[in-house]
Image (cartoon, rainbow, N blue to C red; front, side):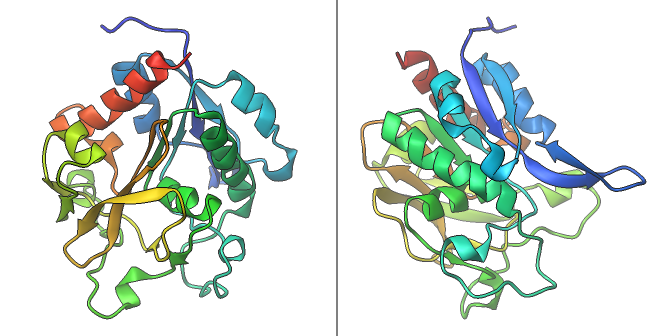
Length: 251
């Protein structure tokens, strides 16, 4: 059992409908909470997707680290100047975006450690001035990165393709490898990379799969989901350990 610290780790939530009556909830997967509990040893704090009603500066004053979670929802096209989203795509969640995008900018400005996962990587890129491809599978030469429609969780979240990491780069040093097998559960992906971000990994089709910040603080984004297998995958665990080390080192 790891010792519990007093560090507060923000975990971004989405707006989702639950129950037989479709009640609106603010939710984040238990996998992120477990990673904070079992690896980082901090106190998980769920951040509601309450749009302009959020108190971003209050959150930033109190948080010691920020995890931007994955989600079925897409980053709303209005925030990066993209065309209207096709109606049959995954839903947008602009209320989440109105919380996370300023939260990212504030966290980066303050040097707050940030770990961005899947949708979180896309939010990170948009928040700092980048753009997104809406449907990678529609682009020539790209593989289908979307979630396998498979009810068996180990298959749905299992390894889907390889990514090649920048040799000697920050992420390669964290995971102690230049090549990883990763899961793949996304439609959107980075198009124009935001200023202040550095590509750390690409898929076999050239899709950007990981970034780090060019500044001195801890800023890491990955397109895959290390929270699904950190309990038995060494590279996934090292990602959370590196984030935890940055959180616990921060003054």
